[in-house]
Amino acid sequence: MNAAIRVDLQLIADMVSPATRALDVGCGDGSLLAYLVDFKRVDARGMELSQAGVNACVANGLSVIQGDADADLRDYPDDAFDYVILSQTLQATREPREVLRQMLRVGKRAIVSFPNFAHWQVRLRLVFGGRMPETPSLPFKWYDTPNIHLCSIDDFRALCRDMGVRIERAIVLDRASRPINLPPLLANLLGEQAVFMLRRD
Amino acid sequence: MAVELDDLTEAERKALAQCRHAVLGTERPLRLDCGVDLGPYRVAYQTYGTLNADKSNAVLICHALTLDQFVAEQHPVTGKEGWWESLVGPGKVIDPAHYFVICVNVLGGCMGTTGPLAREPASGAPWNLRFPVVTVGDMVRAQAALLDHLGIPDLFCVIGGSMGGMQVLEWAASYPARVFSAVPIACAARHSAQNIAFHEVGRQAIMADPDWRGGDYRLHQTAPARGLAVARMTAHITYLSEQALQRKFGRALQDRNALGFGFDADFQVESYLRYQGSSFVDRFDANSYLYITRAMDYFDLAGAHGGVLANAFRGTPTRYCLMSFTSDWLFPTRESREIVHALNAAAANVSFVEVESDKGHDAFLLEEPEMFRTLAGFLKGAGTVRGLKDVP
Image 1 (tube, helix red, strand yellow):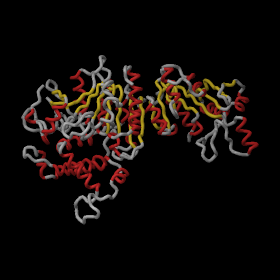
Image 2: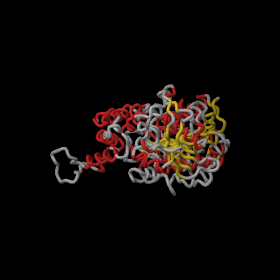
Image 3: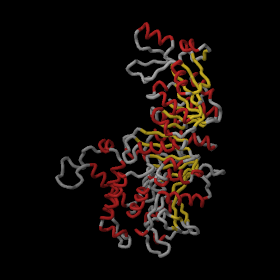
Image 4: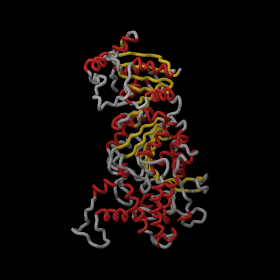
């Protein structure tokens, strides 16, 4: 058991009530899953695109299948989970809006984290550098990035409004993944990433 | 209950001398899917390890088409090591020090369990082709009857590959409360048209052999050895991948430097297949082969649940771990994925791993570290939830 997980994952884990059911979409190496199982007695399942990631998770005793958010969420019945988690993956999906809809169909709540494309560094690089932004949370070249649907924190809020989704919590994180408490306009400028907990309205 | 030794084949005699058996269905016969009531019937099985005090550590291994209950020991007929000895044994992933391992020769088999070799209880005449056609469901019900007989309420894990995997699925669908975890490997929820076609070729080869005698070869003291060998040769090709065949044999010649311009086994691959065929007939019964291949052909778990596979798993409490192999074209990954989709639709607890291997369908019987790691991790996770003590 290793209690230390990435700060943003810890934030997500803290949002999950103990002894519930959760699906982590894009669960990577399974560190969040393992934490939820070990420390919060959550019946946690995972879905991961990379077969190597899946195999590593299952070899660690976690329940994980190979699959992707765009295609495989629709298999699950309504309300199968208390939480459906999507961390740092929404921007890599083909149809983010549909993925969100599916998450909130399959889960009573959805927890989503994503990099903020309106962070001041991103703005600076594009406006003054004239180049596609590369930052610690967006480390890819324009030609090999998996991120095809980047958005800002305000964009995401607008989508939630549009979809009639209630935002139960929104946490904006600075570069060191520390939560920052700022009015929305500043948060959209200074937040490097955000974690949202959503619920069907 | 004593075994009537007179009726047994040499192989059955050796098998039963090396394993356990039970005679079941004396009071209440087994109602087969075809409608026939079978009883009494004999079930030959082998166990490794001990059942713990709270009877929570039983692991049922389901064997594939031509395998048997001798999972982890020298085979009484062939003298070869157990077919899953790499996985089951002291210090292995399934260690009898922790688990009570059971493997049952399937109904219709020829290693001691009742099949076409047996005698019909009513008439005393050999069943041969009059033996009722059995299904994977029947095989599983016979195993469940054995567990009742042994006083084992439920299984920590049911595991098997190929037809063994079909039995695992059937177990989980028919007895969800008795299956804590299930590991169907390299299998499908229904036998495909292509797989039925290959089986039919094998059966036709057996039945075209004049020594088959309408299935009554034992009465005539013959055996359809050539037909059964051809059936095995055909099937064996489906167990390998094209890459594995190419890597192993290529166009290499057998014991010669030039083509023979005849029909001897010029190529190593021919010689290999001939060997596979001829060694198979020493350990397997032709009628049994007909019945067991038929059971696989008839397997259709979705069909048995209104055409919707997810219905087979509604409300299932079982933890599943599915595995497939990249080069398996007999039971390709997409078949496992279909099962995973159905399990997801039932919101089941499921893991699925596709193992990279060029060894084809046979990979599930071979040294595949990724499969072993996956299984070890899955069993560990399931064991923790089950509250199994002393399991590594």
